[in-house]
Length: 302
Image (cartoon, rainbow, N blue to C red; front, side):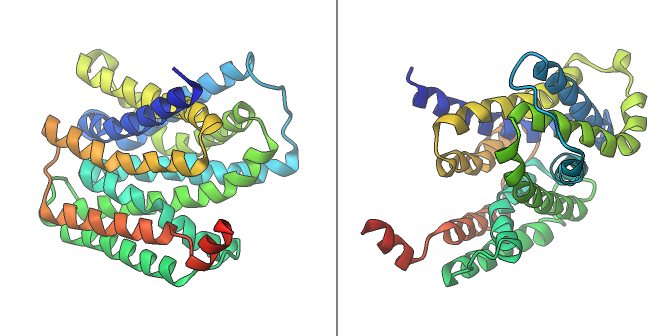
């Protein structure tokens, strides 16, 4: 296989691993372990793995004291608050609704880029943002009464908040990734993540009884920790090194499709017309928001 084929395979596996994560995590939380406890295990184990690997791989970079606040803020948005709201929301809503709402992240990034990076919002992007948010609102509020979950409305809102948090993380991490090696940055991000999540998740994490857990529960927890957290990041590195960022981003849109197929196949969720319609609106919004204005396209052709 060529390097490009390997990279494409890695990108596909990342989308697949994330898609399975929606059903795997839903199988164990909140019935077997609290969402905060599962998040705590997820971050603590991944943090240990990154610190151990950094001892043998990559340059030995030092992080300056003045950079720690920026790394801590990125960790809060991308590891701490992001993962807590995701697991908490997923425990209350359904895998399909959660996976579709996650696709709003590119739209939120476009808004934040316009606010903080002064990027221009052209007409088509504004229309795309409005359509995407209309789809998100439809999914959040109209599926609340029919979805299978203890509190679908709250769960959907938390998943949306998670997308906002992750969008902030993307902007914050952009500068940090240009300055620090991948393993140096990740080990510090996850270390701060452990500090943020421990007060919320340690009680639920320690109260989980391994001796009483079934093999299926343990396998699902292991999957969430190793494959959906550490594994996805490592595979993404391989894809990003070879493929253009725009190509890598396309794999994000595979997640709802794969998550739906997996959730329906496993019987953990049902596909409805509301979810389908909301998903089409969100995808349309993302497509329009990501299109370049015609004058820019013409300029690139000249």
